[in-house]
Amino acid sequence: MAGNCVKENCYPEETGCNYEGCEVLTECPHYKPDLKTGGENSQQSEADEFFIRVPWTGNAMGLKDLEYLTSMNKVTIVGITGVASAGKTTFLATLYCLLRQGATVGKYCYAGSLTLSGWENIAWYLSWKTNNSIQFPPHTTSNAGRVPGLLHLRLQDDNNEQRDLIFTDAPGEWFDHWAFNEKDANAAGALWVHEVADAFLLFADCDMLAGAQLGKARKQTRMVADRIKRGLIDRPFGLIWSKSDVALDSDTKAQISAFITNSPVKHYKEFETSVREGKGGEFHTNVCDSIAWLLSMIDGNRNKLPAIASHEPEDLFLSKR
Amino acid sequence: MKMDQQKSEHILIIGGPDAGKTHFGGQLYGRLQSRLGSYKITSPPENLTVFKEVLENLNEGRSAGHTNVSANEVLELDLADSEGGKTSLRFPDYGGEQVSAIVIDRRVNKAWADQLKASTSWMLFIRPDSLPLIEDVVNRGLPEQEILEQRNKEELPMKLSASAFYTELLQILLYAQKTLSSYADQPRLVVALSCWDLIEEVDKNKMPAEVLKEKAPALSAFIESTWRQNHVVIGLSSTERTLSLTDADMEFVKRGPEEFGYLITPQGEPERDLTVSIKILLGKS
Image (cartoon, rainbow over all chains, first blue to last red; front, side):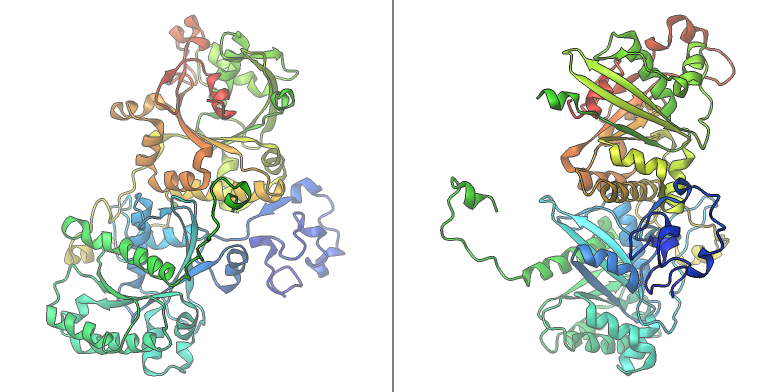
């Protein structure tokens, strides 16, 4: 029993009646059975109780929330991976800030989101507030959950083709545990991301790699990369040099790059990003470009449409496709 | 063709508190009544109480008060265009807080559901002069780490940006409209940037769509993707000047409310005939 409904998976007050589609909840046979006989609602008229509720909450989604979206559209899941404080949430917040200010992702334009409050929550940190404060998003809390917070983004191109993207916003500790032991109880969420994602971004923290923690950061990045590469097949894998405003010597970069590409990866590319825009805004441009690259690689994996030999533009029946 | 002309068009006015819905309604009614514009009233409506206050106040050179939060009244108007084409309009009036409540409570009540079901055009009122500029890492940058650490650590509760608020509002209304009308055609969308007289001088020479794009880029992108050909943005100044609630503007009284107010067409042309907005709402312009 979930909330006020006897049915599992139904949260009528939040996301509407999931079983009968009732606008007046008290009319639903599954709603609050033990309260029904009390007749406490009898004074209220039907019109007062009638509501169309939307099946999304606006906050970051869980698996249940995903059902509404996946029942209508194919979604592309982008696994955002990397150890704690590598800048994963900040990257997502920057992406949203860019879209909010009118940026595009390759050929795609922003076309809405079912998790607007979720996005605005993380982007809030990177926005100047009335008290003149601004800060980085706090650490994404680690819990024993199996599914990370999911952020939805709808994009659309000139041909009206829509893409529904889901970004996983997972705590970095999951990937830490996962790197050492795939079967670790605390790595279940990381394993889930690896299983379902259509594309990956791995975050290498330039700030850590350039400092005293080089050894630790390099080891972590390599280990998570190795995990991602197992069973990757043709899923694209982007490496994000996060916090690229911090100078990192090319040898360290080359070391990590060489390690990742020491066995073939079908689609692999590196991007330098930062919350600071960099020269000519390149670090910001790369945030959007990395997503555009993932999408184009996914499209490249699609089978080509068979050529139609008998195509005649004058033939009404043939051209109406 | 004849059937088509008599099809009832239903305009749903969508706008938060203080967005200028009531003033527009009153001024539009005045123009329709004067029978000098592109559209005129064929028979006077039975019940004019929706516009009672605004008509009285405007004629006395004062602004109308705030529409009661829970008010839900609909004015029905039978109109004819200059070629005799007939249209019936239903003009709902309500307290703008209801619009905020839809986003906050994430649900649509019976009165709104009925309006959404019948609506063929939506007119969304947004005041560009009250759209705050978002300052974030994209346009203002971040201070150095050391300075960042000394900054005010007091956390302010998150407030949805205007783009996010209106996007969510439209997403919720579209969902409800589709559910209620069994996926009938999406209504046309006219975004009215109201209080156009109050925007900055430099913006007055721009196309209304351009102003929306600059003030709320994400909302503009969302609308362009979701409505494609089926939407326009206009500028609107219903009274042309700011009227006081208490002190009468004698010039306004003398010349009469019909002499004030204009709209900026989607093409950027000023138009004093406010009834042209109906043509735009019907997708005929």
